[in-house]
Image 1 (spheres, helix red, strand yellow):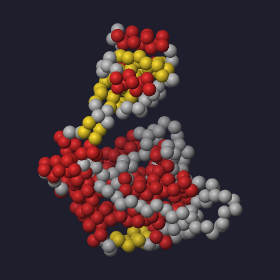
Image 2 (cartoon, helix red, strand yellow):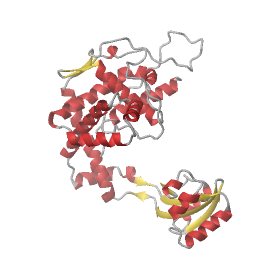
Image 3 (cartoon, helix red, strand yellow):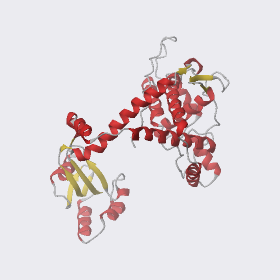
Image 4 (cartoon, one colour):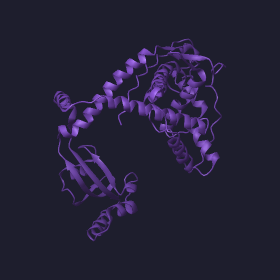
Length: 369
């Protein structure tokens, strides 16, 4: 793997550890059987070690190599799954250089879990329901196990463990946010000091039907005038594969994001009226469903966002202080393994040239809900 690609994957892996706190962990349903992943094994090229070997310590609690390997697999799986690829053990070599930095992030996440377990627990009945819902997407236990392996889980119990952790941590982080309340004066002060952050561009919300010829466009306009349902016509006849399944809905966008003729119709044409324009893609039968001018988000609309941000920041400061009290220790040498070779390197490159340093892991932040 080229060094740039490996760097990007490493950054995604390190970032994924924090964001995975409350991310749903259920395997995606699929109608196409995936290639079964190999059974869980240590990362390729890793020296054989006892899974009970400590890789760190949080207060008086040891964190083992086996626990680290499980978390590393799940984090790596999230990265490759985000690219539409089922996870396989062979991918772990691509992330080998990130293991020491991931350990730092993982120990922080474990510290949060340790704090959360003191006063929070998951509802077993709710976990049962989530597991049943996940299993219901698959025709057989074999398909379910294949999907689990493709998302980094060893088995159904492994998935349940992750769901329990997410439930406990998510509830804990929410209780932290709920502790901090901000009055109207504080919110208004923040708003006045940061008005530039609440500027919003002009926006148009549009639905369209794309067809190859003007004659087809005219026929559709006539059908709509006679009472045809726009969404149904779009689903049946639009040549835009992205919006046709949504009834032609393109959502909302700002000026300059569409081709010139379409952009002009979206921002200067009448709202709620069928228009026909041509572009290099064909003929568009479009309707502007809503249009807003550029301006500043009013305080009453911005207030919930501001309170959420201030709550996150206050909860993060409190969380940092609590984690610091736990006195976390890390043993990165235990998790180091050989990195995947850089296939883009020149054949005559010096064999002992030092690799570029990995990017540092960023701290986890309580997610906004």
